[in-house]
Length: 361
Ligand SMILES: *Cc1c(COP(=O)(O)O)cnc(C)c1O
Image 1 (cartoon, rainbow, N blue to C red):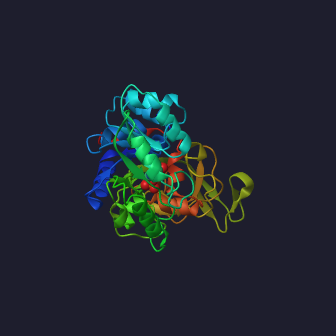
Image 2 (tube, rainbow, N blue to C red):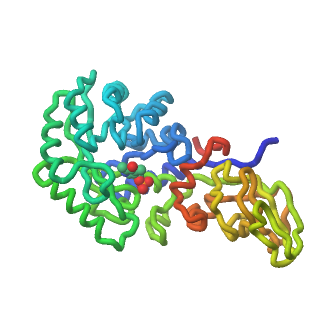
Image 3 (cartoon, rainbow, N blue to C red):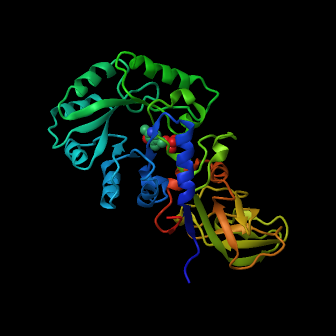
C-alpha cells in the first residue's frame, strides 16, 4: 500500500510531440529543451527518450547539463544562459556543451578563455524581448571577433527569443524576425528563433534551429484553441484516488477558512493530492477535477496533502475511485487558467514527492 498520488509520464507521447515539432519545421533541427527537470517530467528520463531523435539538448545552466552527463547522455547540450562564471567555459569544453553568449561580459570571458577543446557558441541577439542579448548594433562586430578565435568552432549560431509568439494576431513577432534577418544580412550565420509558439504559429521563424519546450510535454503555448496544438499529446497525467467521503448538509462548510459552503445537501470526496504535490494552492472553487472520468468542481481550499471535491452529481463514488488532476483527459491548460497561471508553472513546480511513473521507457 502506498499513497496514490503520482505523475504518469508517457514517453511515447513525448516522442510524438518532438516528431510533430520536427515535422512542422522540416528544414530546421529541433533541440530538445529539457531545462527545469524537463519541465517537471524528469530530465534524465525525458532526455533518454529523446536522445535518438535530437541533434542536441538545451538546458538553463551547467548543473542541469552535468545531471544529463552523469546519467550517460551523449548529445551536445546548449546552455541557454551561457556560462555564469569563467570556469564554466572549461567545464563546457570538457563536457561537449554549447554556450550561449548574451552580453559583452560573456564575450570577453570567451576571448580570454583557453579551453582544452574548441567550443560551439550561440550568440544571443535582443530583437525586442529586452531580457537577454546583444543589441542589433553589437552583434556583427562581436560575431566576427568570436568566430575568429582559435578555440571557437564555427559557425556560430545567432539566436533570439520571442516576446509574444503565443499571440499570433500580434505583429511584434514578425518585427522580431525581420530584425534578426537584418542583423544577419552580411553575416549569413545559422539562425535560431522559434520556441514552441514560433514552431506552431510562425513558419517564417523556423530557420536552422528551433527550440521546442512546452510543446514537447503536450501543452499548448496558446491561451485559445489552435489546430496544430490540438495534435499534441499530454505527456504527464497527475492522478490520485478518493480517500474519504463526507455527507455535508446545506449550510455546512468544507476545509480551511470555511471557503466553500454547501448550498444544498452535498457529498464531498477527499482526494490525496495537495499543494505539496504540485497542485496549485490558488485553485478556486469550481476548478475541474475528474473523478471516475467525470468533471467535478473543487470545493474548498487546497491543503498540503489533500483536496476536497463536490461529487454530489455523480451516480456513485467510493473510496479508492480514480481521480485525474490534469493530463490525458483533463487539459492542464484548463486547470492552469482556472488557477490564474500557465501550464509551464504547474509542471515546473512539481515537487519530488509526487512520484513519476514512466510509461514506454
Ligand atoms: C525555455 C526556452 C525555450 C522553450 O520555450 P517554450 O515556450 O517552452 O517552447 C526556448 N528558448 C529559450 C531561450 C528558452 O529559455
